[in-house]
Image 1 (cartoon, rainbow, N blue to C red):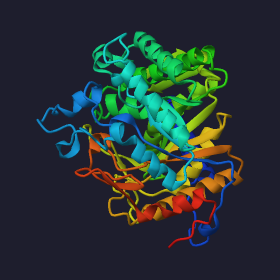
Image 2: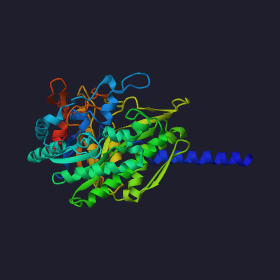
Image 3: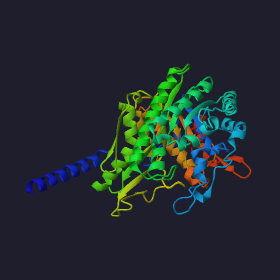
Length: 469
């Protein structure tokens, strides 16, 4: 008994010492903004400036995929799955109005447009491809080229056909094959127009929101399945990367993955339990996929909750670039409640966005360094703010671009930045309540209007300083 108590005491001393060391060596980064020279931020001429959207969120007419099916359902309490019972419907009608929207991009001065292709329109039934839908995306790419804007295609951005969803989607390893075949078909038809590709958008968001929080389809709350879906997504990326590289035009194409980083911090930095929770959540959301890309080995182990291990040698070296999607961070606090053992919070005094998180540009700087460890060029594939009043957007843009500027000076190989989003759109579980657009959209008239808060982004594109107005 004495030996056991002694060992327990040693363990607590070691854990306490580790926590003290970590607090001293890894403080939560905070800058003194009164001393930061944000106004004079400028960027290399080589930076590729762009905007981003996703098909289901802007195109309209997406009625045969997992999300359109999800929007019509209610939860266990009979409540709508989407805030305000919103449905994507015609969204921004971008499918028909893309020429008008390209003119908006020219007005901004961007040189690239990241968009996703809607799998359910291109392959509405397994093995049957719709030539007219492919012709639409070819026409879109041609119109972009005429405007001097490069198309950047995302192959999977949260949505897939209902037939793929009903077959188990990425819950099943064998379903990687039909996804890979779809990607090969798209690449073969669009490769003459598209030189930059994202295989999968935000694998960790897709897995955790669909299988852990239950906010995305299929609405599960199973951490083990979350890990299995995540490793299947990583393998799917690696398979698609190798397949596309082997096709004609593959060697010249730049192929990567859009990885979301969302840091989780301990609410109480003196609490070992808070540190343990944040370590587990960061492992799930951020680290296991990054480690898999670096090493070719996927490991996710949270005792009693999830254990997934797989060797994926093709994942190592499967990036020509890494896409970073970054918005903010949250703090985790352990609670003495078996139903809700921990909660995620934000610090009082921080500037909130309309989403339940804060403006935290220092985290953007940290995330850029984190993905830089992959050793490939970085493109910021998403970064933006939900701000319906447009009273924080300019501040957000100025400070986040300043953070990116500092990361470049610190040696991060950042080659492009895509603002999220070109225009207001359907924001997944939040419906139309969140306004991320540089352009405000009136969804009754489909009128677009440039927001005042977008001006610092235009200044950055045009090479000027980010002076406040």
